[in-house]
Image (cartoon, rainbow, N blue to C red; front, top):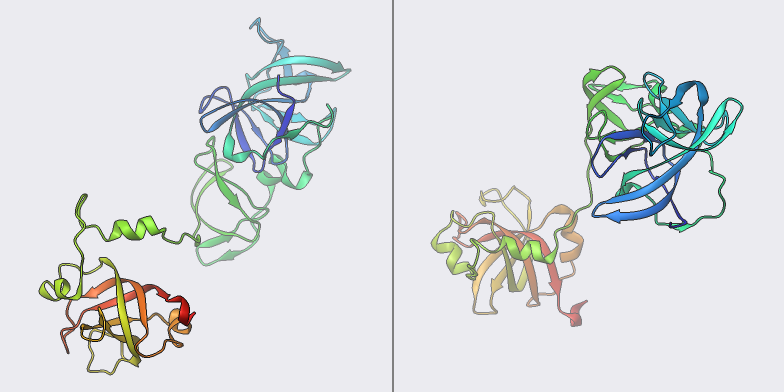
Length: 326
């Protein structure tokens, strides 16, 4: 049997088999002995102590004890020790030893692998205790502190689950605000809003340029001008010759008044005029461009033909200068 030890990074379900019946809800920081992995699941063994009055002898010959307390019972790091988790009523256990009022038990089960730390060699058989502030009881009993509009401060914070007995989707910090949509006993169905840094990969940008699978036509300014509305929203990668950085006058109705844009030519000095609209947060990248400098831009088509001049307009996504100008 493996002696590697892994710990929970978030509060999580401990299951009989991958995505199977929940045997316990184990708190952040609890240690397990690593046994095996299967896809996105890890087989582990957990040890702890349970109050004897909450246990009965098992009728299953493979196990010694069963949790008999209605509503389940705490699994602790030692007799009267810190709570590691809560065992479900009916969970079968192996007995490892006894104290006058306590049983030392173990159980093999499965945990969602993403919730576990990387394995480290086991230092001793003694199980570290779970910090009281992150125990399941502390999280469940923590009051909500502040309301802001329809959103409520998440109190002591805790795990965000897919369902009351579901697996962990993420962790809400104590300072996080959540919108309560419904309640079921001590559980609340919530909504939260936020942003994740998720930049497009080169493959995604390239995929955006393909109209249909297998098609790889080049969308140059002439193609856009011939069908001004057909290609709106498509992504193009163009090599252009920069002429100047301009600000749109009111007469340029395809822009916001005062919006910054690059006046450029596609394909060199004799090419067609194109406009590249520049977001405010990208201005610093283009203010140092040198007239007649050649750059490669990635942009999303705003229109294939502007109303004033008929030149195409793209919204800047990325710009790459040649090494001599960097």
